[in-house]
Length: 323
Image (cartoon, rainbow, N blue to C red; front, side, top):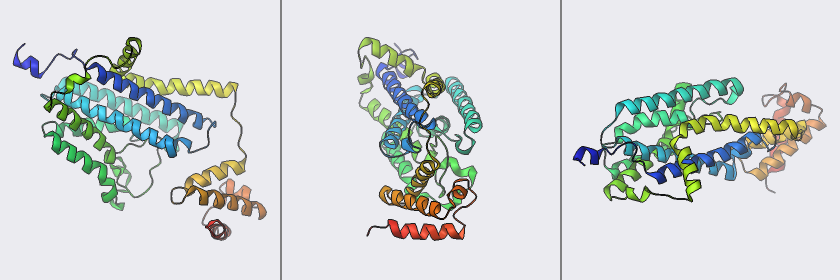
């Protein structure tokens, strides 16, 4: 084997455990989306998958998947950028990302996906090229800086929609899948740094071989090798299954008070603790019903600018504070 073959091994010489890890991340993503689908159809309370353990689970999955993207970028192009395969893969991801934007804009126009994980992968793949020749320690420091950036660089300067992909605006962005450059590109850089460190210490061989029983290993490798196809197919399949379940076993229909209360608590929790929000929202519902204006509030005919609603909000705030 000559020097060129050593530096650029054949594409078929894949690291099996890497494909298995990618497959596990995709299966985990599918389990999270299953929970999201059940929430979407009304089996779970609104906001369930966006808070607590579900939110942590989603972030771990996304971080792992993006780190694998960075790791694979170094393996595929670390010695020499193979422009043709890179361009083909990038085009596939961009087209898939645009398709998701169009579909979600039609299905959920108020929360459509305009910069989700595929958009992030496309942007990170291009930005990652700038770090391919840098030492592992420099890439690791850059990863920390990108992850920390939202804590220091958030500004109203970035509130315009054109900057929303950065993740540095002060306003709350509404989207069913929002994975901006900051901090998520940091996960990609972390994966790149890890790959470089493993190359430096000749540790990539640890990723060869099997990581699970043969039948499971083959299945996970297959999913890992066809990650984009799996990502695009799994959600339509899952949401179709949950839709069929909803036709056979419809979820319990919440009362207007329950719907309003859940939405109120979810909104309130952006700035307050759950115990306060539950008391506050129960108080608001009770006061609006007593004054005979609940139906107007629920229908949106009265909002926070209404003097009567401001009075109720002030009263309920006082009633909900710790005594």
